[in-house]
Image (cartoon, rainbow, N blue to C red; front, side, top):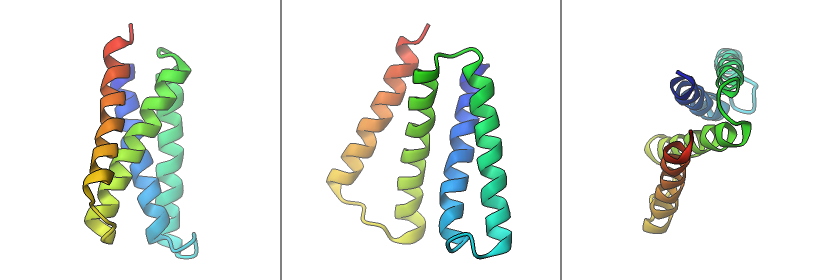
Length: 105
């Protein structure tokens, strides 16, 4: 169950990271509220996952999910570059996430 909570926490991390762009420096009220709510939910889910998972593993996976999702949505939504090297390194992060999951007890 902790891994599912961690995945969900990572998805909410993506939400608040993308929300930062839409909130325009936290100056637009509705996107700012959504960003803050996503941040709170993400942290609460991470805290719950850490009750069962090692904090180092959970934090690395949480940030990895957030980094991969945010980078991919940056490409899709904000016309950020999708170079081969960038996609390769995003893939390396995915390998790290999968590796951490596979070696965790």
